[in-house]
Length: 315
Image (cartoon, rainbow, N blue to C red):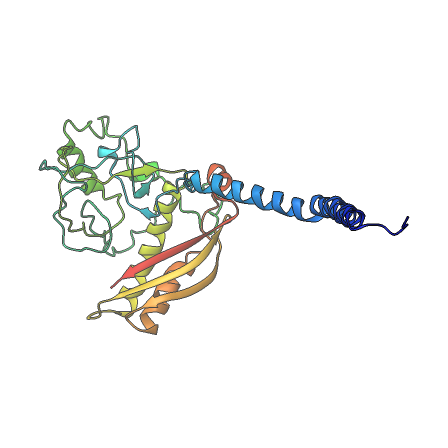
C-alpha cells in the first residue's frame, strides 16, 4: 500500500490553493477598493451631478444698478413746472418739468427752434447790462446803523431797499392771466441764466406755449443754478474786460471737486480746443467767485462732503 498522494489529491490541493488565493485577493482588493478607489469614484459622480445641475439652471441676470441722478443741469421756467417728475428724465433742475412744445408731434424729445446745439436751454435769456450813471449829489440823511457785511461767496439775491421803490398806493404787479403773458413778464425781469435756446428736432404730444424738457427736481438743483449763474457771470466779465475770444470758437472742459463749504480743489483742464489762455480764463471764472455758499443740509446728506463736477464752456 502506497502513502503518496494520488493525482486526484494533487488536483484538490491545487484547487484549494487557488480558491484561497482568490478569496484573499477578493477580500484585500475589496478593502482597498472601498478605502481608496470607491470614494474617488463617488466624488467624481457627485461632481458630474452638480455640474449637470448647474448647466440645467437658467443664468441669473445681473443685479440692476441703482437709479442714478440725471447728470445734466437744465433750467426750468416756473411757468412750466409740474408737481410730479417725469419717469425717465436725463436732466435735473430745481423744479420738475415735463417735455412740451407749441406744436404737437409724436417724438421722445421736444422741438426747440433755437440757434445753438451745445447747451440744453428751452428759452432765450439775454444778458442784462446796467449802464453807468453819474453819482447823485449827496444829501444829508439821518445816520443809519451799519449793516453787517455779507459773507464771501453768498449767492443769495439782496432785496432792494424801500427807498428805491417808494409806495405809490397801488398794487405793484397783477397776476399774469396766460402762460404767454407770464413768459413775457419773466423775460422782462430776466431772472434766468443768460444764454440762447438750443436747436433740437423732435416734437412731443404735450402742448405748451413754452418749450420744456423732461427734468427732475433734486435737493441740489437750486444750488447748482446759483453756482452756474455765478460762474457764467464771472466768465462774461473776464471776456469783456480783456476782449478775449472775439473770433475764436471751440470749447473748454474743466473737472474739479466742490466741497460742502463751497471751496474748489483738484482743478484740471480735461479738454480745450481754444488754447491755454482761454482755458485759463475758464479756470478763473470758476475759482474767482469761490468760496461759494455752503451746501444745504439735505444736499449734504444725499451727496456727502464733496462732489466731482465737469463744467463745459463753449466759445
